[in-house]
Length: 314
Ligand code: PMP
Image 1 (cartoon, rainbow, N blue to C red):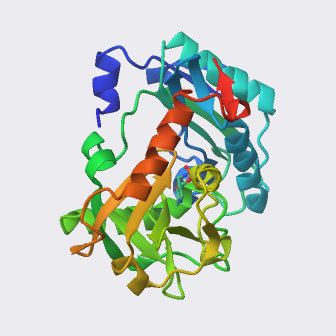
Image 2 (cartoon, rainbow, N blue to C red):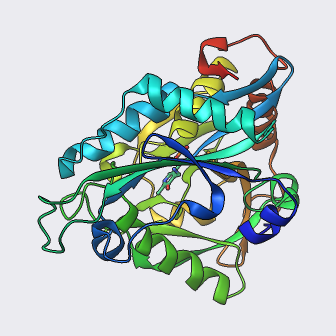
């Protein structure tokens, strides 16, 4: 993945929307005593705009906005902009920077004011950035799958911190799991929940295929309610598959699965070919994964007319 400096040099990124203004990329800075920096008290989103047959469009933006606002609720973090303002800001960023396709990162956090844990004196700051971002785990990953390890780190239980809010601080757990995997030669991790059942990836939901049916951990398993997860459940059912969307998946079931794949706005639909060095199925992208992946890319690139209400056109 190119660094921001490289993208800057290539002229791919220029502008960020920060607290209601479009500012030069280099000027979108914050104070070192920002509350969110110290305590992880921010919430964010990750969405994608695709270069579709009908022009550039943001995929499931309304659902990303729903989750963005809902993520603030446990922290009484109120976003001082409405949906229209955030939408217009995002569309304008895509237009101004000529982004035909892009990753979209809205963030809201407690800002600069005081550093008691209580954020009473801190404003809620909001920013949105967009940048070109190809396949999160690489093009080869989409075709042949990735090798993952089951992390020794467990996911926080939702009795410890709301796992269904996309909170910045939660991602230290994702970093620990992902980096542990990469240090051990894998590309990504699978994280178990506190009870030892399969939860999700550091930034992805997980699907398992067995005997032609799909299984994905339910919301009670300390997962994020992924928007791509919902998309894949919908597409798979439309293709005639039975999908168990509130499954409990034990660690051992991973190794005996016919197929496994990750879903996420960044990871899209990424096959998993090995877990802890044990081959899954034939050790390559499986047929069900491939069918669902094709349906997903046909959808987001608008090669089909279905679900046009999921698209916000630039
Ligand atoms: N789980 C976690 C922990 C994530 O960070 C993400 C990425 N947002 C996902 C799952 C997938 O969610 P989505 O499909 O909405 O991007």
